[in-house]
Length: 309
Ligand code: MLT
Image (tube, rainbow, N blue to C red; front, side, top):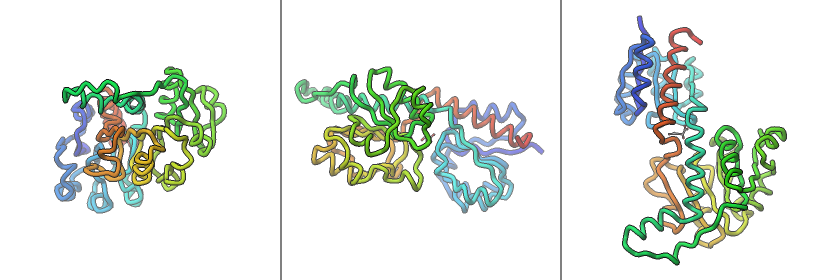
């Protein structure tokens, strides 16, 4: 019997076609991702579950999934999957670490420009017919120091792009070798040095026990006055309350956040502060990246379901 896959999030239809072409039966219903009761009631029919971020593969869902062999996350973060529960049941969890890295790095760079030149506020003001030319004085990126926390796949691309913009780049990453730092053209530093030197700080690490609130009140106090902070990685890496205080005091000049402690974020201490640019977790939201991750996850899951490889 052909394996059966449920696609319960908005994945590119190319993924559905790949499953079909490989002889896998597939149900595509993105409404299920937001309906945990429905997911719970149907999950035992499937050998594979393909998701993005809306579906929460909780312990309850995984335990009810008597036929499930693989959960494929079209994207990088697997924080919406209970990996301990999956591993206990022998369910493989796979992601697509490379499909959206360029897109996410580009979003971080876009957010850096947006906060440096107050583009969203200036745009809203111009749309309102105000023409407030003297209100929106920005800063140049050229010659400024960018502090990159996490210089892996996405952080590494951000480093390269920032160097292309003639910025100086310092990177804090315990896993970054001296050799790779030299190859990237960045200076490897410890966190305190990065905080003291950076004019812009951007985060590119997963949220783990070690990185949770890595930018807390104490770290923020060590930052250079006038710094701007960009987070397109994961909510909870920066203490939003402490950052809001530092923005209000002027110690931090601006922030650009794509990710929030609680998502979907309907409220945050950062909302409605001047020079805080916010987007709704759009890091991976380009046509190209969504196509890449959909293709990759469908191919990986098909390989696993059909050959066990
Ligand atoms: C990811 O982990 O791949 C990104 O955060 C994208 C997303 O969740 O939509």
